[in-house]
Length: 464
Image (cartoon, rainbow, N blue to C red; front, side):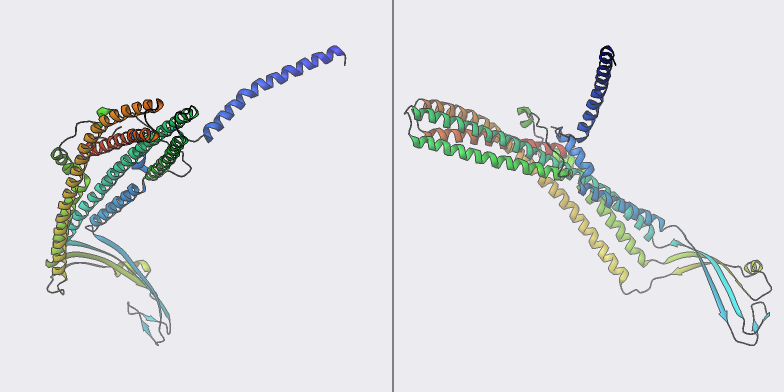
């Protein structure tokens, strides 16, 4: 190969390699991007609305309540089906042997000595209740109320998990802001240490004051670690409510909560209770269980009444050892019957009377449970209203206290810089400032939580 040919060959090879590289690069980038998208965990923060929706679908307590409701529907179907007539088919097949000299079959024919005989019987029977003192009808109505109660139990479970998620979510937000406050405390402590060290180098303060500042820094770092651990614990509690696995990365969305949200108008106890007692599933469920108990009491009283039922049967059979065919035997032996039965209770060992008395007690207990449900609902609303009012008052007071504490700390820091006060006085003002921050933060989330749940009892959706 000449030098010119070698040069042309190298050029062609270089162009081919370049084309392959340009083609493979986008494919590799596309494949790598797909793999990264498949392996990269979900990092999008969870909003409160998303947490509530997810928990209402996946929480195990909610799923258990839904299973209970489905079981009640099955029991209702069974109660309705008990009013339908029964229909059954029965058959019997037998083989017999006798050593008699002469065997006479059903047709008067002589069968040979010591023969085997084969026979079969067939029948269809049906029974239906005509009158049972209203027991079946009242059982159906009782099961209808119980099924409705179970469906309300699902609704109550959904409400409970909603409130629990709101509480846990706000607790996470509170813990997150507590971490920020403690981070600020560490920053302030570091600034104090730097300031004290510079002043010590200038001879303005003693070494003991620098040591005090370093001690404060150590305490602030410890408090920050504790706050971070609390935040992790509260996130774990929220994850457990959502039924998220340990490998799921979980971060919450941190919305801005304005003063208008904290200081929103609080409805009166009477206004909230008037709506809640009509809409909350626990009070409606208690009323429905009273109705179910009353129907159970009526069903128990049916034992004192006569019971009437109608029955019908059709039967036939055949036997071997005869000249008649099986078909003709089945036709000739066809037997049809219909009957009406009446059962009048006279004495059953006080079973009926005992059942009625027990059912009556269950009705009284259901009435007491209904009153207790309303009482607990009112107590919850009154407590939430009191917490909301107190938290709003505390928040407004904490706002003023924080403003004064911040100004006082700023002046104390300036005075320490000028050598007019010592480390103890500066730390006191700093701690007062941080305490005011914490007090305002606590009042803020107490007010928001109580107001949100009050709004929920009022029938408003929870949003943040």
